[in-house]
Image (tube, rainbow over all chains, first blue to last red; front, side, top):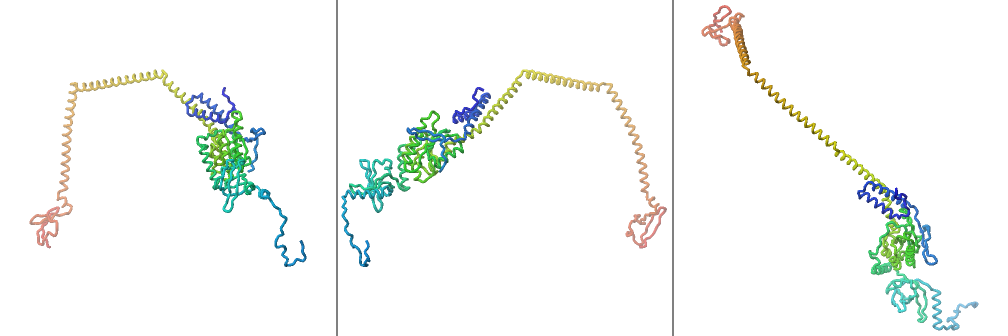
Length: 85
Length: 466
């Protein structure tokens, strides 16, 4: 299989889900030859895995912007102040 | 001072003794009063109605704050830029913070205004309406300005208080629905003096930071939010400085301030208004939630399509096979051979039946020919003659025998009917002598009548006695 089989984590979710929708509608609406159908199936399965991996991300990342001494904004990662109010 | 003993009539000095004179100049006295006021009263909050408003060319503003009983001179210097001088209108009910002092040239005490707030809900509402009209006229609320939100935001800027309920709500909803997002917080106070400017500053900070990030690393959308509160608590979101910052934001802005019923200027300028902080978080993650369903259904949809494709291919293959079999040349030969067979047997059948018909006709003719031969006719006639003579003899013989039998029978019957046979058994027959009539009933007989009675042997004559 020449097609990239392993999910590329750098693909944005929006792109992956959009491609998956495209693959599905092509399979359902167009009368594809069997060979193409199988290729689409593999592509769809790969995209599902990718999307599932992205949707499975459990951690909400929180960071905070602060102004540095020179006035530029600096992001301080992991700033997750506990809820007091 | 002790006088002893004090007389009950000692009333002391009726008039104070004149002290040593301390004479002030007007300036000195005024200064004294000024110091006294500044020290003893100093910074105060005071409420009243604005009147006699005068804006000088210098930019300073003079007016009188009054109520039903009194009035107070007020000055708002041009240097007090943070103050909402646009709220100062003739007759407006306002709340002022200022330093009490004395304007020495006139010897007039006055309030130097440092801060100014509209007072009362009605006044706030009025300020809200004024700003709304102004911004609407400038096109800040135009539907055409509203930008679409990203369907799948990866990095969301959030302007709110880090300790507020709103921030906690947003985090909670996002963690529950879809956590794979980064929230970049630009902290700000959300109420009180100067909060609006701070919020505006935070909004700009997020825009600036995002613009500096490499492609794809910046923010996709900004959420401006705070939890519920009174109209006064939410007031920062009704201020022009924040409205302008939202209008200028390069990134789309979602505004979620207070509860469902609260509408702020921020909501109107923002690209989208959410009813609550939680609702905003739900809107921002709604496509992730929808795509979770899509992805979970996608597996069975993919399988179904491949199954359908395989089934179709199978059906097509089978139908081709069938058609190929039908089109094979052997089929033609077989069909023709069959037809030939059928034709042959049909031919035989027809020929056979004709032959049988002819033979039967011939046989009938032979029988008829035999029947009309002359010798056969003579023999048949002789035989008939013989039969007829025989029947004639038989009939004669039978006739004679029958006559004899009938004669004998008649004789027997005659014998039975002879009256002599009856008389022989002891019966008698009585007749009238005169008429010879047979008497059958005794009532017919009269006395003296002559009777004749026949017995088996002989007869008796007699006369009836009665």
